[in-house]
Every structure is written in structure tokens, then in C-alpha cells.
Length: 202
Image 1 (cartoon, rainbow, N blue to C red):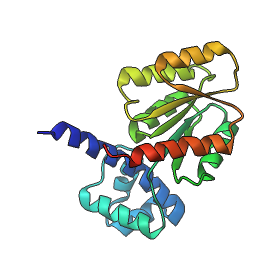
Image 2 (cartoon, one colour):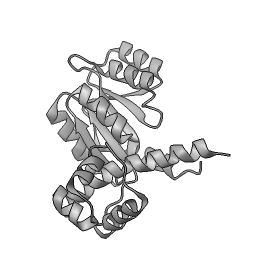
Image 3 (tube, one colour):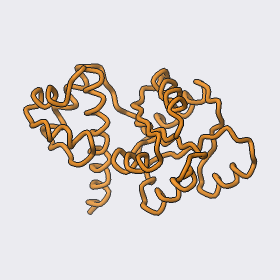
């Protein structure tokens, strides 16, 4: 039987719902209380879904999907940005939102927060700044590897450094390097590739 594989698929789908709740609230202008009333659940339930602490039941997942479609929301690709510079996060978020390939994007300006979000949200793409205080990008990648939390994410290191040793170290993790300043064209290419991989038959 392939119960393990189907379980993995269900896990990924559930984790995408956490992005969906936040996106529905942002696009539809819902407070957590209003969304709870819309779905016929309690406020703590919606709060728990959005924080990744619990998973919606099938009927609630269907209701979330239906509401998302009515708002014109698609959640095919999820992007997480981890960068200690809030301006850099805002710039990358803007590029992702401006792409012709639809994607949901969240960011964290603290590596520890980023690790938690990565575990809860299971993004398709992780744009990871290298030079951060306390925990740098390479250490974040190492911890994700140790915790087996990067099995579905395409990790891309982001840096302004032109030092060849950065590329060599990134290659040790099996990941690529994206250099700042980041252009719309580069983000478009990353999202388009992720989209094509997601559309490919398994």
C-alpha cells in the first residue's frame, strides 16, 4: 500500500491551508473573528489554523477553498523570505507579488522566526539571506537539513557578496546563490520554474 506517500501529500496540502487563511483575511478584509463567523467556527480555531498549530477538517478546507476562489485567490506557490533587513524583505515581497506567476509570500526578519515559519508553512521556495546576526543563512540551512524541514523547499541563498567561497559553500548544501540587487526578471524565472515543477506529473 502507498499510505506513506498519500500521508505526505495530505501533510503538504494541510500546510498550504495556513497560507490560505492569512491570504483570505488579507484579500477579503476579514478579521479572524469575522472569518470564524463566515466559516461557522470559533475565533481560536481560525487563529490556530493561521499559526499552523492545527489543521482544518475536510469540510472546513472545502469552505476555505470555496471562499478563496470567490475572492479570486490561488495558492499554487508559497514563498518564504528570511532576511534581517526589513527593507530587503519588502523589496523581495514586492517582486514576488509583481510577478506574472501567482505566489503567496511571507517574510521573517529573524532567523529563529524564519525557522519556525518554515516548519509550519512548508514553502515551495525559501529565499534565504546569508549575512544575518546570530544565525546566518548557512546555519539556517543546516538546521533545516538536520530537522528534515527542507524536503519540499527550493532553498536559494541571497547575498550581495561576490566572494567565490560563498558559491562553494552554497554548493555544499546543493543550493544556488541569488545576488543582490534582485531583479524582477530573476524572481519571475524562479517562480516560473517552481510553477512548472508543480504542474509536472509525479
